[in-house]
Image (tube, rainbow, N blue to C red; front, side, top):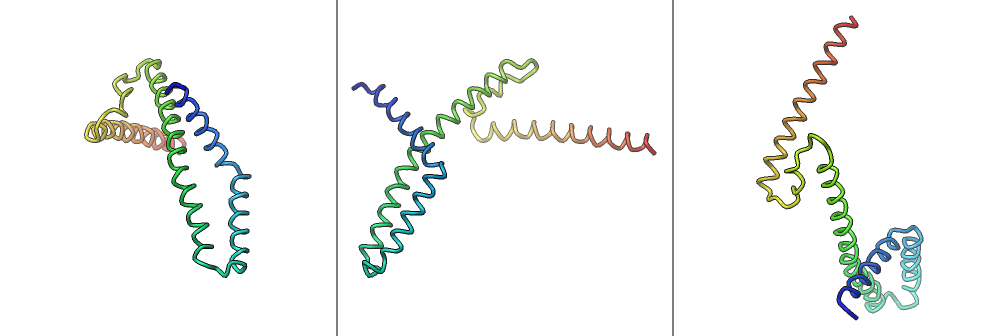
Length: 139
C-alpha cells in the first residue's frame, strides 16, 4: 500500500469521522453513554476504576478527535483560500497582491489591514455624508 493510498484513506476517514461527530445522533449516543456510566456508579461503588473508565475513554476520544477534526479543518480552510484567491484573481480592479495574504507575516498583514480599515472609514464617512445630505433635502 503506497503512502498516497494511505493518505487518501486517512482523508476519507477524517472526513467521515468529522461529519459523524457533528451529527445529533452522535451527541445523543455520547449523552446516553454518560447516563449509563452514571447509573452504574452505585453498582461499582463509585470506585476509582469506575471513574477512570470514563476519564480514560473521553481523554482518548478527545485526543484523537483533535487531530481528525484539525485535518478536516486544514483542508477546508485551504480549499476556501484557493476559492477566494480565484475570485480575487478573476475580479477586475481587485488587488492581486492580496491573493497570498495567508503567506505574509503579522507585520505585513497589519499594514494591509490598516489600509482596508482606512478604506472602510472613508466609505463610512461617504455614506454618512450622503445620509445627512438626503435628510437635509427631505426637510
